[in-house]
Length: 452
Image (cartoon, rainbow, N blue to C red; front, top):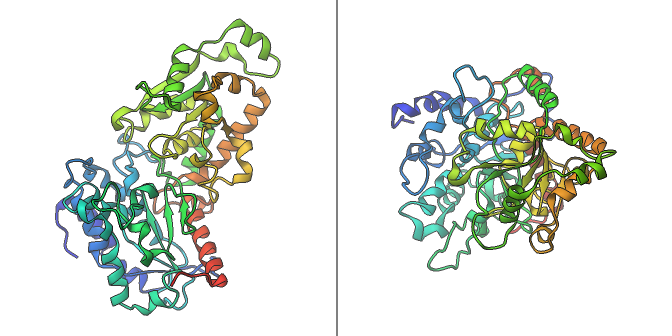
């Protein structure tokens, strides 16, 4: 593979030995690989690394070239930073690919593998259909990959009709769910609507409610610790942080006249204040209001200004007790995971925002232990004040919830590649996603319920 520009030299050096890496079994004597073997399917670079060369080719989409630094983690937030990066969430596929090459149970023998990973950068490839010259051919997204899988060692795909394969997508499923019959195309590609891929397990940042093959995994945050010491140091800081703001909303929207949950949040934040009656009613079991300096804080993230600037929102999140996570264009938000990293208790307004999405990483049966749910309809149309709900939660319960959130931090972060053995012993978002994919594929194959 030839490097197209100097800026991609690091990727060439990183992946130049990919064939040699996957041509041998990568494990160690202390790793139990029973039912965990994965074969990385060898794909031509046009399906992954070559796509990165188009990082500045779409004027309607942000130039993501600067965020390819540090193997996709992005530039460091400052020169001495060891754990914090200006990470672009679009690059989850690249980071997952890099981490997969470090997976301890890789095998060069597809017949030994319990699952086959497709290192296809589907979301980056989709940009040419979403923002580029092929917008009118968006129903073809993925067909070139399918043809390649059929024409090259096709037996690997056909033996289980693709049911032992999995891949990663770094945008919500709705961006890939346009019907193949829509003409002219409206928005999105048809990748997830192609019958050819119905059996493939798709790890995606937001799934739909019905297709079995879609499983939501956490969005990328900007926190990627390289060793256990940095993780434990951060958790110590989170636990000691003084929470001087009751509730925080970091995001955009809600400025129009149409009733919606974001507008209701902005209206309440702009008008709320603590009163003596609040203190009187709740001072036994509720919050210690004298320590609260703000009822509500808004970090304006309109027009994507927060996406690559974690300092803008992480500091306020560290000071907040509750982080409001209203739906936007789609139910889920990257901010949910930023908030968890900061030890900020999430407040959801739709079950699709997290509870019915991230069951592998945020177990559904635990939600009452670490999150608050307020139906958005009650806030928008019935006049329920978010403040009343949150101040009604006993102080001891708030402390317990925050501790549960802190315990979730390792489960939702993607640690840095090449991390220390001590940190690798703690399962992160990648580890849990791969484990879940293996279990789902195994169950699917045993059931024999495949689309043919």
